[in-house]
Image (tube, rainbow, N blue to C red; front, side, top):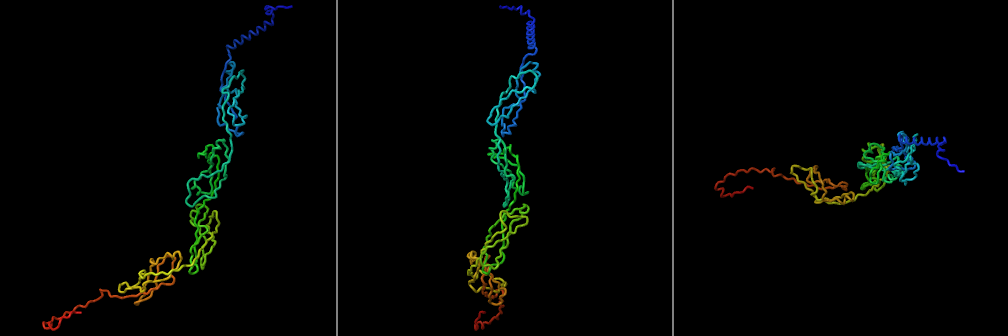
Length: 439
């Protein structure tokens, strides 16, 4: 049997009335709350933290990005509650630990974590994502070269150059490492004269010859060296070969050597002498080893202290020459002019000897002789002639000439007698005796 429940019946029920009262009270509370503490939105700037340093472990570097220092976080809630919320209540974090390759170009920014006690809702975050550019970090070994500046004085050079280390491992972005053309240390040559080692920081150059700042001076190396000086080798000949033989020439196996030592010592050394070549009594060519005389505190570089000498011995050549007597000058005789001297021979022939290559160049017209007649006491005498010859040419035997003299009376020494006057003849005498002209 259906029973109809009227509204009055419901309202007469105490429980229903209580429920309705509660609902009305809640509704009134919400109305009052919405007016006094309405729902609102607020935007906070929250610092954004990252762990980009984890990329280094994976040899990846963040080259560039649009990652901001802070993000905008939009929150919603009652006005009074929002007023109690600050940026420090949030933890915004961008996590790089999931990146495994350099191909990733964007990252989403997650909703920050709210650590406060207010009843709020995070409705939005700006920006929602960022762009990133990643690049590999690589490590590569490069040899260290020397970039020389200036020049050495003639004859000097640096030898035994050693770099410690002589190479270097550089670690940087792949694009930077690939742009490296060379690694070097710069050395001014004149500075090497001040010691035997130095330390220098490396310089890293790209393919355009420009220094790469991020790597410049990041390492240093020690350079040790010696200063070498090139000096001539000399020797002298002692003794005389067998008669009629001569030393044509000699050749050393080395004409120069390099010496090393303290610069203050070697700068004053201009020649290295070898033992003398003794040719006494020899009549044929020979070869001999000679010991070099090395000064104290000096060493030879790249050579030993023994050289060889090839000595060429040859026999003299002979040649007969004739010179006119006009080529011989007489001296030491009478200076008053009363005595005249002359050489009896029209031509004087004699034999000369010497090295063939010199002997063939001797011209008889250039040979001059000299005779000293100081001891001549008669009208005629024989004298040795002093012959002037080129160096290395000698007379075989002696040259002798005959010198004749002639004594003359000078005009001023002749005394003419004074004439004796003759008496004047009379007329008879003039007729009888003819006049005779004095003789």
